[in-house]
Length: 171
Image 1: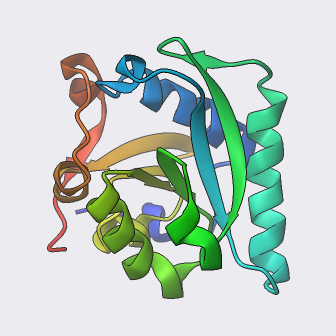
Image 2: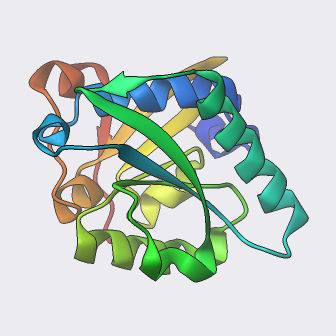
């Protein structure tokens, strides 16, 4: 079970989350086997100012990292509207806070297409998202939902799995 602090509305700052996402992806097996760019879809919702602001903040944070490569592939953030989910080329989906009504749709899509999901909200983990970057005692904690990870076809290095918190959701 996740600590009560993980349920708080406060999130890990986006600049720290973006750096952690890169570290997570460095440990995801198989990314280096594909050629080309590594697109990370940052989900938003047109017409929702709060979600759009969060989406822009995460997009800008990843862009601020500069020319980052993971397993030899250039990371490219994509602003992706939830309405365009079915058209994405993203290999990773970051679920922006405020998209709670869409998490089930996102998770179903990601599992069908074997796309890794990451979120900064603990509640999303219980809905099947594979990886969470959650605040805990003024630090960022990476939580891997084994159910989501397996359903999305993701595998991580053994060393990575030793340092993260593990959980299983019922979905």
